[in-house]
Amino acid sequence: MNAILSDYFLPCLWASLASAGFGLIFNIHGRGLTICAFGAGLGWLVYLLALDAWGQDIFAAFLAAIVCGFYSEIMARLRRCPVTGYLLVALLPLVPGAGVYYAMQYCVQGENERFLTTLLHTFGMAAALSVGAMLVTSVLRALLPKFHRAIH
Image: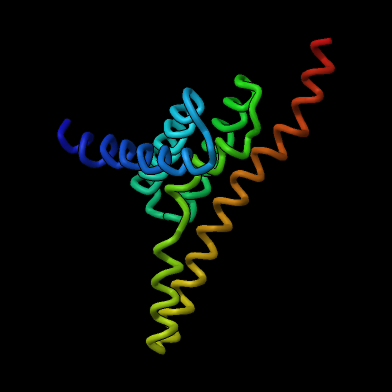
């Protein structure tokens, strides 16, 4: 039980709180801020679980982006708000900022192999996030009008 708390619950809590701070920067208030923060914690939980299950961080980021995309689309439709705010805040903990930092550090130090390896890995993470979020949005935008027409 203590391992679950330290391995999953606390990192998700910190991801939620950090994302709530960015939600304030994006001018999200009230329940919307709580919803965005929960989406960030959910995305981080999926990332951690997928990382434990498969050991591939790029694939874990892709799955987390898909979950964040679905969550953001659902919340935006329920609250009649733009998806962008929910999605940006939910994806923030997954953004590979450290990869960019270390890639540039290796570049400045002249460690070309480490620079290229880190840079390509960072691009892979960023691509996984963008493709995962874009895939969900594209699929929903293609399918929802068909469901809407079938209902009416």
